[in-house]
Length: 108
Image (cartoon, rainbow, N blue to C red):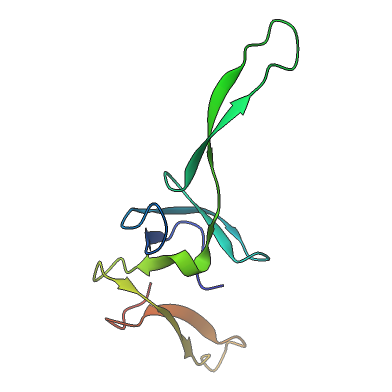
């Protein structure tokens, strides 16, 4: 998955189309992300014990990754994510893999 926690995303499909928010959590196994303030539903919670009150709770549900697109922090446009691999220096063993914006080419 190309999105990580803390990314700014824009909703492109669904009831919240056009809204933006930060990725709170990533569910890689089901290809979904939890975005703050988006895809919220009301749930009626019944009292379980005596003395407890029933209430209506707002729940944020995960969105499919296909319904969101990353907003590049540099050019502020919605974009796809690409990767660039920098070769390791002579003393190092690992190459550095970084995410890049497909529109402006800058590192995300």
